[in-house]
Length: 110
Length: 112
Image 1: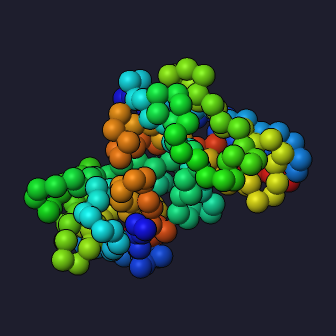
Image 2: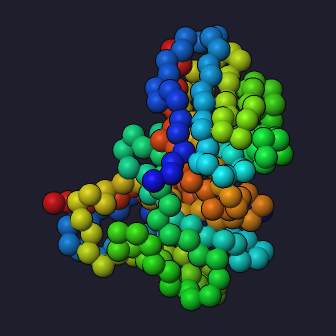
């Protein structure tokens, strides 16, 4: 069965620092991969997606993610975070259905 | 921008009451999904519609929920008899391709 793991439930960084949020997936085939962000009292917004090709994909608001087949990972990165990036970030994988990780709550200190 | 709409945003019910929430999918999207989320944690899949037909659902939905899409522009999710454990954020998403889903803001249900 497919599964998605986000090992860090909470991450705190200072404004202007770089960021990496980790995501590992377990699947017999390479799934389609996604990162979503959930701001307080809102639904999920699609940040970026990976289907195939270049392992580094660009998303909105300066986010990017890198797919690694050998590590079964799809980590999210940002070079310089802003306080408004504080939110919960979900990694998701599509096999027969969309499977979500448990989420990482990001807090950006001003 | 096109968007998925959900109503109401907040719903308060007493234990044993019926609850109903609605979703208006993005125009042109043929797939609609419902998820349950508790305390900003992972989303739990509930049910999936393709062209208004339910194609997949979990047992809990079969037993205690009612879900329909009477038109391509409206879907609803109901709980026949609310229980405290049903308190959660209910998220609707729609998609042209099942795997790329766009979410509404959710309906937050509180069962007292």
